[in-house]
Amino acid sequence: MEELSRYQQLIENMLERHRFEGKPANLYDPLNYLMGLGGKRLRPMLTLIACDMMHGDIGKAVMPAIGLEVFHNFTLMHDDIMDEAPLRRGSETVHMKWNMPTAILSGDLMLVKAYEWMMMSEGLTRIKILETFNKTATEVCEGQQFDMDFESRDDVTVPEYLKMIELKTAVLLGCALKVGALVAEADESDADLLYDFGISTGIGFQLMDDILDVFGDASKVGKQDAGDILADKKTFLLLEAYARADESQKRELNRWIGHKAHDPKTKIDAVKAVYKVLNIEEIARQKANEYFMKAEHLLDAVKVESSRKQKLRNYAEYLKNRIS
Image (cartoon, rainbow, N blue to C red; front, side, top):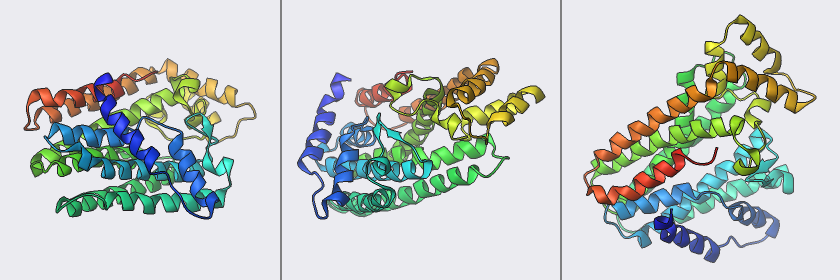
């Protein structure tokens, strides 16, 4: 990914120059802490790639790109609270390092700061960018509520789950790409194609994340080992397992899902054993690949020189084949 190092450096330099400052310090410190944990900077990278691809000035795209990254981290801070997650990117979550009220309030502040960055967009495109961002922010909240609602339901379907991850995860990738295209003043049809590309890539990305949570190396992924299993998350893997399981396998899943295990490893191993018999990992990878393939076709339709699409293709390929 050396060809994208310029984008990465722009993002990191901007974040370093614009650290959050204010009083009381314990309100602002969690923002800098969470942003300092790193991450892939996926969303701002997509904004800069899209802007450059559509012949735009990436210097004008950096500020809204950072706004999207701040918003993303706001959602992570609050998601960790709702999930009672102990780790984020291999480090303590904000509510564990500080406390719950501070994490909630600092997360609220992050949302305000995200809007400040989005408002730094230039020209008449600012209105379209804010409209896109507002729609996306609303959908992300809808997706999170669906996710929480699923916890108390035993009839969640795979299509419902896919719609939920579209809202909770994929729309922000679509927004990032569309914002980059809007900064470049691209045709609306191309901006929409890039948005749809982001949706398909985002769903594939989340399916891969589900797989890595269960079958990846926790030390590399930077999250709690099989946290979705321990939290009884109704992911694609679990829903597909229930759909394909025989009565004996369903009884085994029911034995563990919804019950707190005294020994977490025992629960993880038991659920993973059912997944392995049903070939759930491979099925999930195939579904993720379907969305990545759809994304490729959408990118093909964008009216810009094929050579200018290569960076976005390479970045999507990187996401598809990231560590497992």
